Every structure is written in structure tokens, then in C-alpha cells.
Amino acid sequence: MDRAEETDRAVASTKERLLRNAVSTFSEKGFHGTSMREIAKASGCGLPTLYYHYSSKAELFEEIVVNQFLKITEKMNRQVDFTEKPEEIYLQVIRTRIRLEGFDKEVYKMALKVWLGFEDSGKAREQILDWERKRADSNRRIIERGIANEALREDIMEILINYIENLVSRIILLDEKVDEERIKRQISLLFEIGG
Image 1 (cartoon, rainbow, N blue to C red):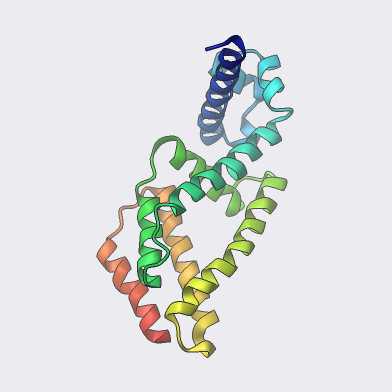
Image 2 (tube, one colour):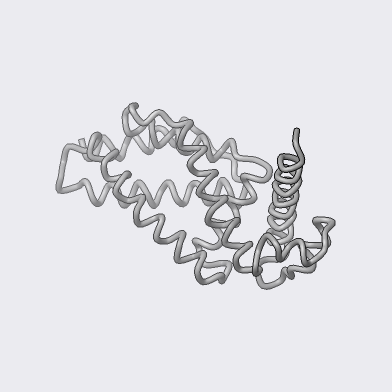
């Protein structure tokens, strides 16, 4: 390994350590209760190193609750077989959230808190809400495959998405254990109604 590769790995390792410690600190104290000094200290580095990677606390927070959240979501979506029946797709989506743990779960939890408005971070919340609006089109395409009744399609989609969002919030924020068979029956029922 040459010197440039060593430097690149050291920088990536430092950035990873900063992210992990920022997630822990933000999770414990929230955005407003956390200082950059605390994150630097928890990461075993000085403030100049932290500011070299992130120009502000808001930028670091945004990196976590937007960029890292989207990476985790994309990784989970790669585990879902989108060629399945819509009911099975949504069940798989829920299963990926049930299996979340560690760093990924903490990032997802932080993003949910921002989405729900528990963390006032301004720009990050707007980005998550914008992502959610864009996601509606892909949900619409999935649901169209399972709901023949056009008159009910939008209503069923709204009910289903609200149900899943509520369920995922309980799984992630409250560590609630869920009965997959019951969830499967409930999701199937919505598609039967729109049959």
C-alpha cells in the first residue's frame, strides 16, 4: 500500500469514527443538546479535525439523518424483491426494518425523529419530507399492481402507507415486537378491499 492509500484509509477511518460518535451523542442528547466539542472528544480527536470533515453541527447532523439514512434505506430496499405481489413487497419492507440494529438502527431512529418533528433541524427535515413525497410515486406503482379498483386506489394507498409508517415508527422508536402473521393478514385485507 502506498502513502496516498494509507492517508485515504486514515481519513475514511477518522470520518467513520466521527459519524459513529456523532450518532451516539446526538441520539443521547439531541441536536440542540450536543456540541461539536462533545463529538470531537467522544471521537478522540480535536475540534480542527472535526471541522475539517464537517463545517458545522448542522452539516454533520444532515449527513447522518439524510445521507446516511438514505444509504441505509437503499441497502434495505436491495433486500426486497419488487417482482413479488404488492402484499409481499410491503411485508419484506417491514422485515428489513425489524432486522435493523446497531449504527443503522440509530441512524434510522434519528431520521424518524426528524421526520416526525421531534428534532428541529430545519434543512434536514425538509430533505426527508421531500424524499418522502418522491417515494409516493414508487408506492403508487406497486399498489396499482394489487388494487384493481381505481376509485379506492388512492385511499387504500394512503391507509397502507400510514399503517406502515406507524408500524415502522413503533418498531424503530419503541423497539416494539410485532406479529408478522398479523401484519400480513392486515396488509392482505387492504388489498382484498381494493380487489
